[in-house]
Length: 417
Ligand SMILES: C=C1C[C@]23C[C@H]1CC[C@H]2[C@]1(C)CCC[C@@](C)(C(=O)O)[C@H]1[C@@H]3C(=O)O
Ligand SMILES: O=C(O)CCC(=O)C(=O)O
Ligand SMILES: [Fe+2]
Image (cartoon, rainbow, N blue to C red; front, side):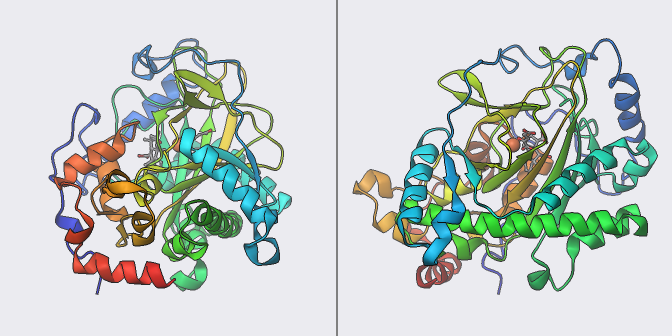
């Protein structure tokens, strides 16, 4: 029995607000905007001026601060040592609690990611984006789908276009999926010659998944719900991996590589390539840079975890800027729950809350399928995605007593885990 069998009928199919600039074409219009990609590519990269659709409003393109964000560096290896209940875990949990209660971003070392695998994944992305457009377009994103190749999101939006190309694909642990889904994706959409690259990303995603689950243990401890609560919730998740390529931009002060947003997913693990910075976080009205730190992964909280923590851990509002002369690459692993899992705070978290106000549910139940559908078909992810999703679902935040039986059986699984 699925835990939430009614999710596909939730919400309306009307776009919310002004945030979706282009109607999503019907599924059978797979070829609908072929010329747009090509036009964007031909017009933009390497041209002396950026076309109007790439110009961001002044409020979003606000000047960057010089002051680097002092995000804590959490040694997740030390946290997991000796069974995960020693001083390393205590220290990591304190650091995570402090970062997540303010801006929602920290860095992670001691994660065990093989540097050769990290290099292969970054170089693989560099090689992919250098391929001829016709080859990249074999993986072209289908309308309404988060996976595939996209140039500046021109097939989805008409304004505030991001100065980037992306390649995204889904991941499930190969033991849970019974197949190497990433390898299969590369060979099926790009061709059998892409099998080695698919294998690199299969391994990379599996490494990222293990690190994410370790971080979920630290987060669980930091919120007082125990190590396994959130870890078990995500163990069978379907995550998204995205390779970002930001070309040099002739007018970097008017463009953005990725506009201001909170990730709709639960947790993001970002690997930045080399010394070119670009990631910035909004803190007290200032866009503060997060400089690449050799060997470290940047981790940020996303909206789905904000809901799972009942608003205690804030999703991180961030963006990526571009440079006049330098190109930049980054790899983002977005940890997501299994599509049909009900996203709601664990009962133990609510029970331990101080007072009525902290116990009050801040967000309605939703599934990752709801969130994915909302952000792909109805709403361009930004700083207010979670609130907009709640309105779209049309449900008032339920009280604990009003939990559905499906959610209650999931709660039991979370409790006993
Ligand atoms: C569910 C998702 C929506 C986005 C891809 C995944 C995870 C992150 C989201 C995104 C990167 C947040 C910024 C805006 C966005 C449109 C982008 O610039 O790429 C977002 C993704 C998307 O909808 O494709
Ligand atoms: O490239 C970066 O630094 C950030 C990218 C990002 O925020 C995203 O892909 O969601
Ligand atoms: Fe992001």
